[in-house]
Image (cartoon, rainbow, N blue to C red):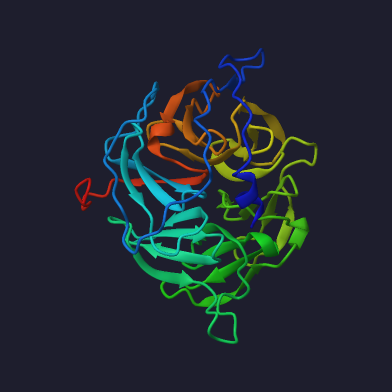
Length: 350
């Protein structure tokens, strides 16, 4: 079991009171949900669709425009859940066959959804409307002597490069591999194992404004920078001063780079041009993992520890409420992605 498979089963710390400290840092006041056994439901060959339900406490001064959806990967639940990004209403729950330890997500140009199945060492392609499994895009075929995946071990991040190939972080081998997006054929190593001290490339890697590749090194407690075309190591982008403790997701927002720091329970802010530490935007979040910025102006942060999605002001860090609460059914949620609404959806309950 990977580090996440074990960590997701540990009890989380209780959230602190939601009140800005003198530095303006807000903390989350959300009671933890009832404890989970960590046992996932059986996967089905076709996706299941849940009845929609709101997840309460969605108090926000910003609101996502009609039609924006939030997709969240549930590591323990072995599913991908689709929510209305503005209200937190559950729109669908996908449990495709073969999904074991859902992590990174990516939306293809044709609207299909890619999900990293960390525990099974595969990348799955799902129908963007129904969530049904279309194919196993990248994985080793145990029936052949060769490793068709190129040594993929614990897939985490999924990132479509500007040039069109699919980049996948191999968490347990500390490398980033490249695949043909259409066929899943292995193309080669993008970032060599351990390059620049890479230790646990997590699912929230991104391309920066200048085209370089920025990777959270989970065990290295740093954000590392690589050439976006060659994969050559450029340098450690964030300072090695203890500001990060288990970085998971990176988000460039104007002049800042935001990083979820899982073990410290914070979203930390750095300068986007130099990587210099700015401040802790918000804290007291039990195990923050995924993070996205909605079109309505909310910073949505996945709390692995609470099994919720929390909304914050991206400028001040003020807590705007719980966007997806325990009723959303998230079990060990990790990473998230936004997309426009899909109109061709099966009716709820079908």
